[in-house]
Length: 263
Ligand SMILES: [Zn+2]
Image (cartoon, rainbow, N blue to C red):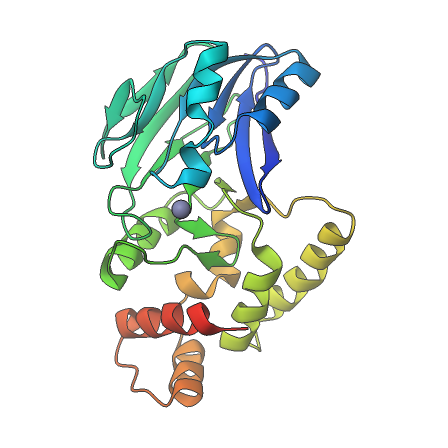
């Protein structure tokens, strides 16, 4: 089997629309707008074959109607959210099997950012590498805001993503990495891997190169929202926020709230 290419197409201010292609056909994940997808497909001579959606937010679904005007393709998305144009409504345990490009994806429920948010896990590409498309649930060094879910739901969703194989390439939907790293360093200033990542990520952004994909192993090492059980993070939260941290859920909830007002 030929290798697959995973391309983050920039959209809006800081979104990425991921395209997965076998060199002829491409799947678009969360096309919030059509124009950048059309332009990239034309540049590469690729044909759109399917659309995958993770959640209902406009910046993830807004380009679907226009792309369907170019070519009617199947649209996959969460069963638990009101989204127009869905051909297939998916929930936890469902599988998506695509022919062109050849993709086998397992659907994971990851509520928290929105109540019906799903992620797509590819256990192995032709080279043996796993991939996950997680929308606005897990970001490089961060996680999505809790618009519709509870901290407990989001923590469970992040736990299920963190349990994927360490080599899994994580295709997040936003370039938020530098600001996430600033917050992560406030939570865990002594994390040397995080300090090194700050320098590397800053160098990439200075060259206008994406910081993504990240990997699950890297996120376990640097992402404070996957590290809420770390005693040093819990001590920092208690100290900075003058709150009592009793367990990883209370640490996670406090951290998520702190991030909302962190500048
Ligand atoms: Zn969103």
